[in-house]
Image (tube, rainbow, N blue to C red; front, side):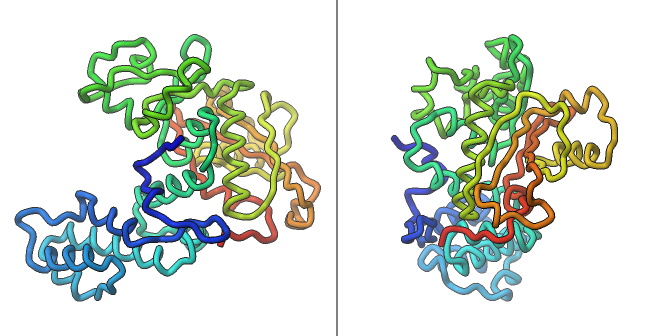
Length: 338
């Protein structure tokens, strides 16, 4: 069954190693974005550039062509888009482009573009997956979440979906998660469970199903499986990931924060600081990671347990940073699928 059609995976090809190859159709999808579509009042330079790229999306674009665009915002949008496009077409695969972004620094690359890369790469990683819990857990990689405790469970829902819901939510869960401006048709959130899982496929691009992230339950285990597959696909490193129910008596000799909040908490613990209760309560997940081939582990980390930590902000939001799994693990070498 198909899912996440909005990421554009059907516009891409694969190479023999399973990596995603950029196509003209995929590049043209960026040109269709409203930020790049010339408005009626656009100058001739902008309209001409847009038309030329629709004909040949790999066409070289000189700096002078962008400088000739009259509107300053449009010039900035085109500069960012062309820089991103050039990075994509210069790379062997989308996976290689993502690794280059992560390792060399994202610079001015819009977070939206990075999240879109993660989205489509994860679609490739999870191709053929039939576990709805893994697919929903994977959404954490590229879509911010809002969390709440509901009926004793820690529930994560898509932040953008929640903030676009009806001003008068129809369920207690939506009321607890919060709501803002009215949006027709988005009036309630279903928590993914065995009964509702079958509906995920036809609504996967709506991002309107919540996930139970309570310790010891299926959501965190599913997220661990996605993390394992992400690392193997991008770095060609086989790992085992075990979700831990408690963080007692753990020494963070080597740890990776899966988000900025978790990194800050991990740094404090590593420096021997005593965490306040509120900070401890913000920890959502803790995993123990084992790299199967010990020879691939950096000497300074060999024999040490490796932990992954995830936490929410004081405002109960979660913005996962999957790039930390590329830059933070003590791996001696690793490369994307080619």
